[in-house]
Length: 181
Image (cartoon, rainbow, N blue to C red; front, top):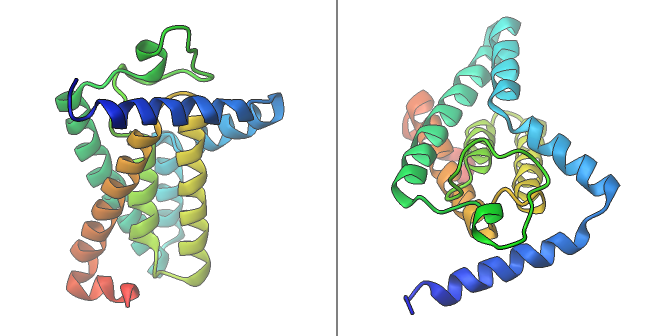
């Protein structure tokens, strides 16, 4: 038995316990949340920020960098770790949505959502709260829909947070982290 085995068993048990929430209405909500985390959604929002002009263009730059960093790092880690998605790793388990690729760890949707949310935090009281709430909803949706294990999502959130901070530092320098304290 590997040192990781107890953690991975707990991760699987947690995923299966989330599946108990399943209902038609909840599945509909979670699918909509997951779609909000798709790359197309982020591109549309980023382009809208750029099209608005003025200081709002900075939001587009932060969003783009947060997403770019998060997606790049998460995709590299997925190819290094090669963890199978729950529907391929648990006998009889079926995902409630299409999976974009074969690998689960870390969650790319969650990493991008948190990368963007953290990059935008500090840009206005409403924008940070809205984007962090959305990122949290996207993270929960990935587990609920069976696309990821909870550990995939937790690591995606941590990865995205670091990438969002890096995006802020690139745009603002060290002063971009002043919202932390």
